[in-house]
Every structure is written in structure tokens, then in C-alpha cells.
Amino acid sequence: MDPIRSSLPPEVPQPSQDARLRDAAQRLEAAFLSEMLKTAGLGKARDAFGGGAGEEQFGSFLVDEQARAMVEAGGIGLAESLFEALKERSND
Image (cartoon, rainbow, N blue to C red):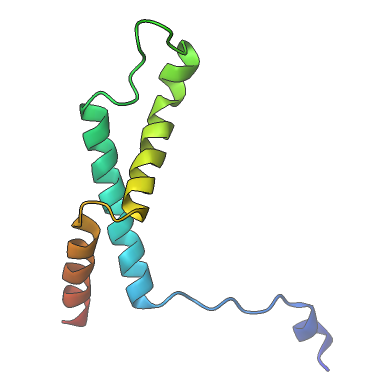
């Protein structure tokens, strides 16, 4: 038994090309949805009963997480369209 090889951590399998493309497409859809939600006014501090400076500082994180949750729930179909286009382009 090789003492050096046995002390190394096991190799982690790399995600497939499709998994990487799907992840990129989902992240892009989440970024798009986040910007749309921000434009719609989600995450802005309210005049009454607002959270103050903390809400202003961290409201964008909440909007980003809401957009990510929307994508995980199926989103608007943008990620699937992007995935198919990226997959087709990578196969060329």
C-alpha cells in the first residue's frame, strides 16, 4: 500500500457537460428573474414598518434567493431554452 496515495482524499467525480450547462442556464434565469423582481419593486424598503438600514442592505439577497427558488420550482422556461441552445452550440 502506498502511504502517500492512501492519505489523499478520494477523487470527486466531475459533473457532466450537460450538468454544467444546465447549472449555467439556471443561474442565468435566476439573475434575470432577480433583476425583474427588483424592477418590480420587490426588496425595496417600505415607508411604514420598514426594517431600516438592514433591510436596505440585505434586501437584494432576499430577492436573489426568491429568484433562485422560482427557478427551482420551474421558473419561466428560460433556463430550459438556454440549456437547449447551449447544448446544441456545444455539440457543433
